Image 1 (cartoon, rainbow, N blue to C red):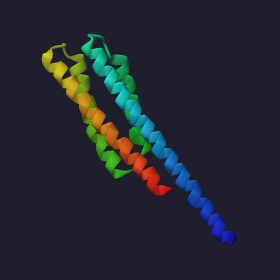
Image 2 (image 1 turned 45 degrees about the vertical axis):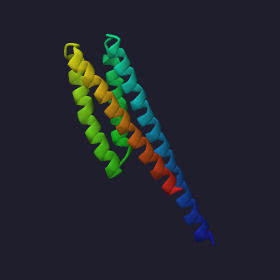
Image 3 (image 1 turned 90 degrees about the horizontal axis):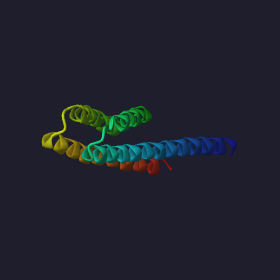
Length: 128
């Protein structure tokens, strides 16, 4: 009986920490979405979104280090390339082509972060 209770306790602790990690990852992905939107809006208004971009990169790195899931790793790798492209567009002269690139990359980042949020939530629920 004691062995069963100890096992149940261990499973519960790991399940809760995994669920907590999934929630934390989902929050980080939501922050990534919000920052991407703010960057797009600032850029469209002719403002310099450099500080927002730096925050976005920091959040993205936290996401990369927060999960060992291969699907999330693949998406964060893809989003890393998107962030590099976004940086290039942001430091280049503002023109209709770069505006289109920033808008398109925001959409891609939104979808990628939503995928991470949904996947992390699903994994957290599966461990409960």
